[in-house]
Image 1 (spheres, rainbow, N blue to C red):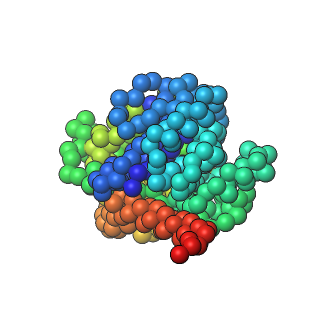
Image 2 (tube, rainbow, N blue to C red; image 1 turned 30 degrees about the vertical axis):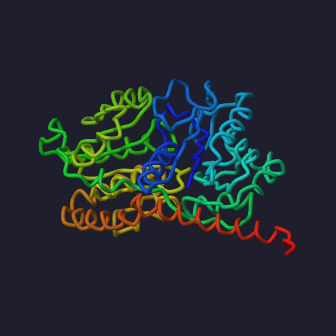
Image 3 (tube, helix red, strand yellow; image 1 turned 180 degrees about the horizontal axis):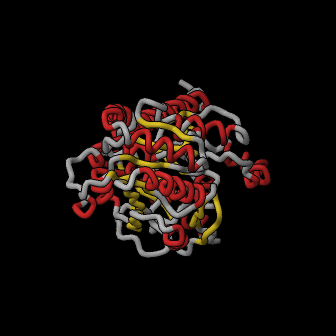
Amino acid sequence: MKIALVSPYDWAVPGGVNSHCARLREQFVARGHQVRIAAPASRRIEEEDVVTIGKRPVTLPASGSLARISLSLTLGPAVRRLLAEERFDVVHVHEPFMPVLPIHFLRLADCVRVGTFHASREKTQFFYIWGRNHLRRWFRHLDGKIAVSAAAASYVEQYFPGYYNIIPNGVDIERFSADVAPLPEYQDGKLNLLFVGRPEKRKGLDVLLAAFQRVRAQRADTRLIVVGAGNFGSYERRVRSRRIADVSFRGYVPYEELPRYHRTADLFCAPNTGFESQGIVLLEAMAAGLPIVASNIEGFATVLTHGVEGLLALPGDDAGLAETILALLADPERRRQMAEQARGRAREYAWPRVSQQILSYYERLLHERGLAGAQREPARAG
């Protein structure tokens, strides 16, 4: 098959949807398919199979985060040229209604069109309400619809009812379960807690810092390691002003280096307050064999079973989070059992398995379109 994977987000900036597209590309190419990724980019992209459409992304608030997307007026002609040159069998748009690149592909493509909905929100999405009548036109252009979780499907179905095939995000099992060396600077006998995420309020780092201050009051043999891209200055100032000891801010860590941080950790913490459809960071930590303490939000509860692979705590409750962390730190055998369960659960989300589900869905849609086309053809005179 010849497949286009379309991301609305700046390809030069790491993020969950872009990572999802990159992993799908790897899996599809390994199976002999031809793949092109189409996305805007704020700098030159050296990857041969990435086509840059939209060179000046702008930053807009979205889902409790900031999205870098292109609003260029030249997107339509560029999309039309790419479709004419490549003649794709499948165009797979991610976040179909995120302005505006995916909508151009839905509008102009004449092949099978698939959309994956990644987002889940607890609050009303005014953009969907305001633009629902206009967006329905492009929604009808989708031959197939994927949601990465039941939470994501439930959210989008409020505005655009229909059938959503739930196919989750994948995780790179081999990378995160690899036998890598831990970071030597943290091998001093302390118990290491790991946080991976951007400095956004929805990621809950402020809650975790307050919880860790409580943990430190009872366990001086603990350390919190904070990893993520972005400016953590306000959090670092908070740590200094509150005199919270043993918090290590590492900033951006390349994807290939992340497994060393997981190998260094004794416990993974995900204190997110919402806006999570599935929780890729949980799956990566589980693949690495880490017990988890996470917020009890819908997107996380679909991945992690309370008391099996980890423990779930009330979102935003730093006292409850601290109590949950302390309970696991005090029970090494329970942590070991949860780590083993986590590895097994993560294997259900291995990229080869997830990508094959998506390919099978493409094949089904192509078959259905072929049958529909055959039924529409007039009978030949014989």
